[in-house]
Length: 294
Image 1 (spheres, helix red, strand yellow):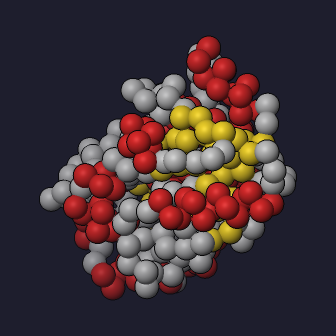
Image 2 (spheres, one colour):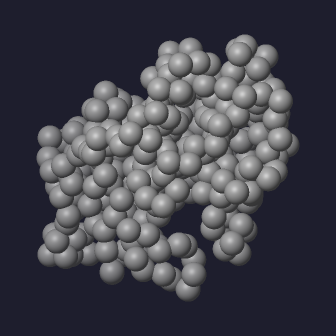
């Protein structure tokens, strides 16, 4: 039994699910999710969320408190967590608390009874089951007419998705201090790079603040502001991003997945060099090697 703790928005939940899915697949055992932390708010440290994975075509099983208790998480101290993380072979019921943002090389040695606590933001955790995830991370519901129309426009040309994340990145002090907020110069430089590689592009802007984008994003290129999913069905924005030929992503797990799910073999993906406000954090394992960081 693999249990994965869910925390954060849709993109983060996808990372956590994907890592757990790979470990469960490796051990041929069940994957369960612990969704009890999503709506907790430890002194404003992060934004409250809901269980969002249910929008996809996957078999979601919720872990019971009885199943979670077997991992003795409440009595796990700093040294115990380090021991379990580095010497997982010593444990039959392992509480794996992620440390830092680099890929944890011990991951594949975690036993078949493991509780995963972390963000697990690297494709190295789940690359072996890419085909499974591409199938599961698809919308459960049929596209409405408006989204079908956007999909036709995206498929008709040299489409480039541009994701501009604002929301809590600008409204929440803790989020701003942790993530930082990308400036327009990043997007202009990213677009310049793509135009050096591809001609006749059309830009499709995705954002949680399209009004700001319309007022501040001035391009000489054909530009579309994708407004079909501003009040609901936000996952469909990710779906539409994945069908764009190329992607300019924000320092956001949401658009990371939009680019990762993109199956265009000649895609160009531009990602920010600094994923977090703290530029000393080593995020080399977060961005796939074929993507360009600027």
